[in-house]
Image (cartoon, rainbow, N blue to C red; front, side, top):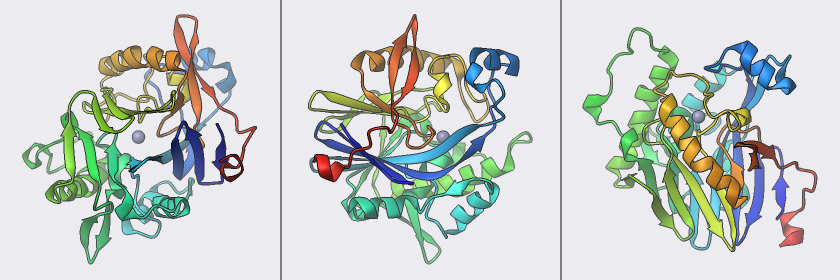
Length: 315
Ligand SMILES: [Zn+2]
């Protein structure tokens, strides 16, 4: 197994499958958990004095035989109206050349993408589903089936027209004024499949329900030649949530703590037993790791980029 990594793209072979992480943005995140600060600082001596932890937003591309999957086309391309707005809001973060540049480096054209997985309907995972042409949205990946958990779909009449009094107005705007029109465009184009339960979408690629972050949240499992990889989406936001199944970043934005705990309890020991390669959307780039058993539970073990082998050298 080898990884080929630059500042924005990290590619790894898993069996006969190529998996690439495409960094979109990264920066420092303050540590905002549903447990009090004294508790988490005590449990995490390595963060005893930390004021922030590294946070990234990455999408992933899986190339397997005839299938090319994009998992979570994130924010939109550099220079676009929306990307500028997001970058303005995250002024202290750094930005990458974007998914388009990442796909170009892999030699993948937008119309060659066969599957798009939206792990969940949160804006930071799917604002890049469309491109804007003459003020209108067009599907970015016009030949791809797009998969979203049915429980995340809201009919237009179910969407609030104005922010509730306690809502974060930026979050509201990016969700209801930016994300939903893009999802609607994918549906109008006949490209959207709403899924329920485990769903095989391509040879060796299965989507598994993992509710909690949202009701329809799914993770991705890939398998090839006896090796496996999991993309956990937002089953965790920080590596230390893997070891502390009841910790989540906040119970706002519709998160369901009990559902999250049940998903982690169900999935994480299985993934540890498989000794799979594991990544998640907000892992510090490049977020390659494994979930290993640790006493009664599990913890994250980052795969260090010590032996960065060149894919071209190693085939
Ligand atoms: Zn997220």
